[in-house]
Amino acid sequence: MTDHAEPVKSNTRRRRSEVRRRTSSVSARLLPSERAAIEACAEAAGCGVGTWSREVLTRAAGQPVPARQAARTDLARAVGRWTGEVGKLGNNLNQLSRNAHQGGRVDSTALNGLTAAIRDLHAAVTAYEVDGGNKARLE
View 1 (tube, rainbow, N blue to C red):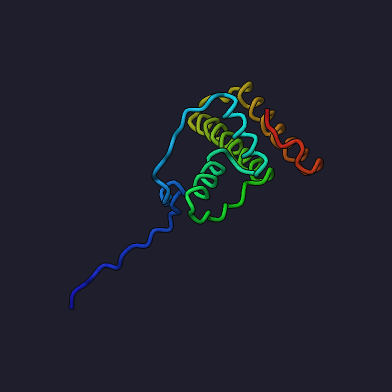
View 2 (cartoon, rainbow, N blue to C red; view 1 turned 90 degrees about the vertical axis):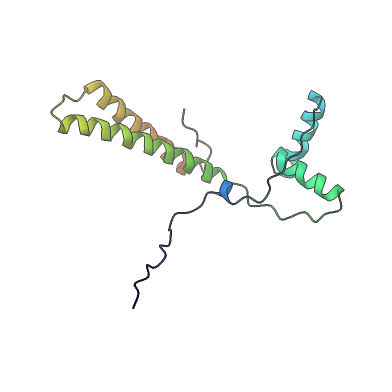
């Protein structure tokens, strides 16, 4: 009886860039007025310049235009920014904590700065909830 190892399944999620099927690109030089007109059309269509251009070119070539992926909402963008901020705050807290555990002195200025950043993040999230998404920016 032989002992065969079972293949290990990876639970890691592949990033979208790793599974992209679109690998070819087209470029063109434009006048500033042409670029502005394309940007305006893309914005009116509710997508980016790349998506709009791909759809127009694909349609002109007589090919089917694939469905668009849903655009990120303001809430999704805000949560993404907040998640990044929480990561930075956690890193700063970890550094202060490690220093304290190693017998070092915790810099009160750094601790006060971290506390202020946490308050700012809390205020941004609260303002977003109260104003229905109008104040989702972190300065």
